[in-house]
Amino acid sequence: MTVPLLDIAGLTVSYGGAPAVDAVSLTIIDGECVALLGPNGAGKSSLLRAVLGLIASSGTVTFSGTNLNSQPVEARVRAGIGYVPEGRRVFAGLSVRDNLEAAMFAPAAERGRRLEEIYLLFPQLHARDRDAAWQLSGGQQQMLALGRALVQKPRLLLLDEPSLGLAPALAREVFAALAGVSSRGTAILMAEQNVRLAATLADRTVFIDRGTVRASRSGEELRDDLASMRLPGLAQSPDRSSP
Image 1 (cartoon, rainbow, N blue to C red):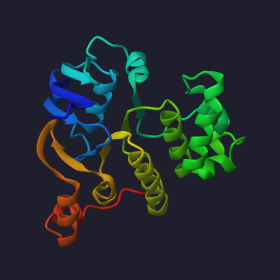
Image 2 (image 1 turned 90 degrees about the horizontal axis):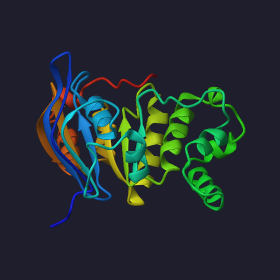
Image 3 (image 1 turned 60 degrees about the horizontal axis):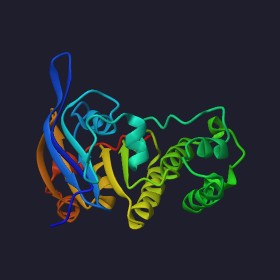
Image 4 (image 1 turned 45 degrees about the horizontal axis):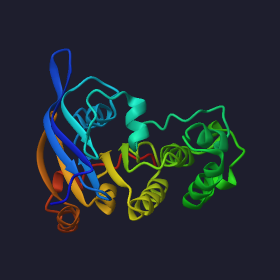
């Protein structure tokens, strides 16, 4: 039996006594991409933040066999969990290179190799290497946010709404890069509302509403459903990307 990379058991997050995440259990294996789908306020972002330890929760989070409940955020990152929050949140006044270097936990000899890997994955960042982050387009800032997480060499990447605010073409470009990340063996747990984009990447999809898992299916099943329009409420949901 395959041991999960991430094992979430009975995870609960509450705000003011009301559960945002209600006893969710979920496992992810090495190299798997799982998409959390659901409406605004469903609890997707809270689940990701709880896994990283950014907010208080009950239940159990186990990563690579280690219980993380008592571990601070820094320890979880060093253990191999990367995180890209909603809204990108790069250091606007720093250059692309300085943003990436600031995120590294690596000896000097390794830093150059890691930068090169990011620039190969995101050639647009290489071309803007010395430019300040605020000078980048929204899509390039999202690539930079992804790069900042990936230079840490995570085994699991948590993504919160990676397509949010991106023009459709840029969103597709970002997801193409994420497919490359996934193909290299990095597991991904992604909160996303653009179902069609999520379906291009996900091995498995989990539908969450009001903090509770309502359904789970394979990525292939979701792609088949979208192709045959058997999910009209989801397949016809508006693209939240900007035109």
